[in-house]
Amino acid sequence: MLMKEESTGDLIRIDDVSQLASPMESHAAGCRQAGQEEQDLTSYDKAGLRFPSGEMLPKCWTDAEYQHP
Image (cartoon, rainbow, N blue to C red; front, side, top):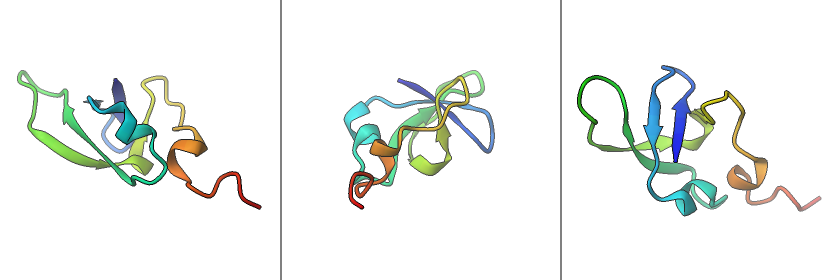
């Protein structure tokens, strides 16, 4: 799945979508899609990732307590 890093606008390829969707994980591993060659696998803070359209990640992907009062 391609995500966009908010601070740079670069696309990040996330292979393990379950890690991205897990509210228990604060980071997701991905490869930056910038330059002529794909970059090495790096850990990205989920708070700084957006969908390519600019939408934020769903709260249920980032907050383990989102359904608790």
